[in-house]
Amino acid sequence: MEFKGSANRIRSCACELMSIGDDLMDDTESWDFVERDLQLKATFLYCDFDKVISGAREDHKRSLTELANRLFCSIEELDLAVKVQSIQQAHNRFSDLALVLEEVVECDLMPPPIMPSSDLSDDD
Image (cartoon, rainbow, N blue to C red; front, side):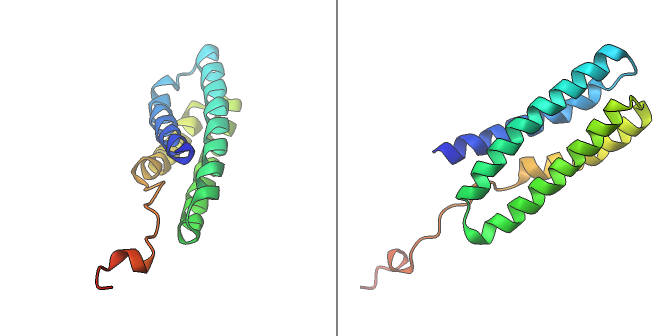
């Protein structure tokens, strides 16, 4: 059940981050807001992805790890653009991040457990 909560928080954070593009304006307050929001959401995402990946089936761990790595790389690139306060670079990096966020939202973070073969047949 704990893993399901983490998966739900990952999707929720991803959806919230998708709306951050509207906050990218060229003023000091919006830069500060976006930077703090990115850092906070990245922290939640890191903790929740760690739980989900740790609890995933072996055949699913690799794809989840690759998705998480792409997500954190995109967040870091956007964070760097925000730190230098480049509106054009921030919009470009946000576009890249949005693509990964869509993958996160659509991803099956918690596939069903593998049923033992003996439970699948009633021929016994």
